[in-house]
Image 1 (spheres, rainbow, N blue to C red):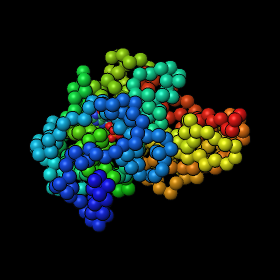
Image 2 (image 1 turned 180 degrees about the horizontal axis):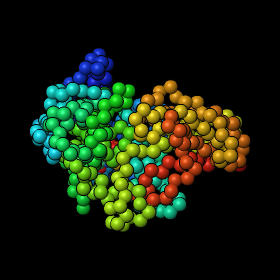
Image 3 (image 1 turned 45 degrees about the vertical axis):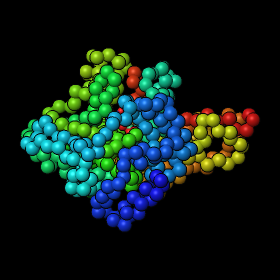
Length: 391
Ligand SMILES: Nc1nc2c(c(=O)[nH]1)N[C@H]1C(S)=C(S)[C@@H](COP(=O)(O)O)O[C@H]1N2
Ligand SMILES: [Mo]
């Protein structure tokens, strides 16, 4: 059933090209829900899951079944008939946008952008000193074609008041002890429309299909270049303000602190952009590697600066003493990862493979990432120890 649905949407999308493609009326939430996932679950309901690393680098666009899920609360119940996104705060014309309006009544755009969790690779922080939180490997990342209404178009329609500086997003979910999940971004980012790089979206499509419940059905924000936490799923409310949101996930989480104390959280700035990153995905940790030639594969993510792309990826087969260039995949654009591969000749025994990426801003993955109490933004050289042959 789902295959048919997907193909139909894909065909209609291709035929209609850039024009807005209306979601067929007969698509029910439960059909979308049937989308299968091939992920390793750290936790269920709320679902927190990442793909096996070899699956992650099979294609530049990550199919939904291999796209990580990071949720703080179980998926909320949605009534499509009454669902609307309200826009309020420092605007002259506060109002609601119905789902029908978001899908068919407003300008549509697509943005190809990589989503990555600030906690991606957290388990490597824990090797220095344990940190709590979902123990992510390097799989909390994925690249998708998002479709929906440019956030700037929505904000234009409600007319911003002078002094507006930040845009808050609030979900309709409920996180135990914290209420709804929320995000916040500077107004400048919310309004940014670059000629070559995608702006922010109030998205209802992912890879030519309606968003699935896991990924925020019916609508979510997509903030290219920023940590995933700013791309709020199950979006119910947008608030324009002169300050960042007081929501827990802006004020007291997603900040770099050495101790998780109220004082440190109050003093630190929210994380917005993600830094350069990269990881080795093939061979995976548990692979049996034979002596001889091996194709090593992985991904590299440029820092979330507008216009920035991956310029170079280097690999080492001796733990980082000597390096050579990897082959870069053809597909590369701002706010998107780049896949890479390299041929390595491995001798029997223990070998440490290492990767580091550099972007067009000259930023390179560091040899070490300073430890922080919440385990965010781990982006050091990625190392993989492999036993070649019987050793
Ligand atoms: N409502 C809501 N939105 C959310 C979250 C959440 O828990 N609830 N998690 C955020 C985080 S931390 C990330 S990394 C991304 C993950 O998006 P995905 O599950 O579609 O991959 O969603 C963000 N949006
Ligand atoms: Mo995240």
